[in-house]
Image: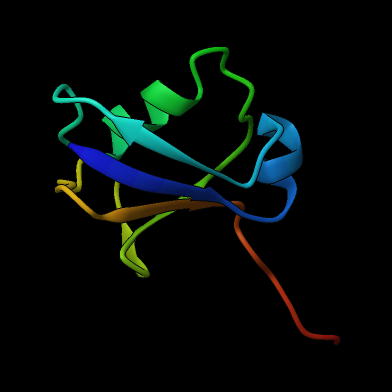
Length: 79
């Protein structure tokens, strides 16, 4: 199985790159993808997840060709 993985905002600085591929038959969920790409536990703090541009949870299943994105919580706007 091959999955495209993207990191946004401060996460790409924490992990050192903005995009990678995960190729493994042992990847079934977003949590599995996170374990594969962050073996050194570099990503800290609260994370948000998306699969194919839709919010997801760690137990959300992934499939061949999916795109999984990791990003920090976002707040915006000016008071």
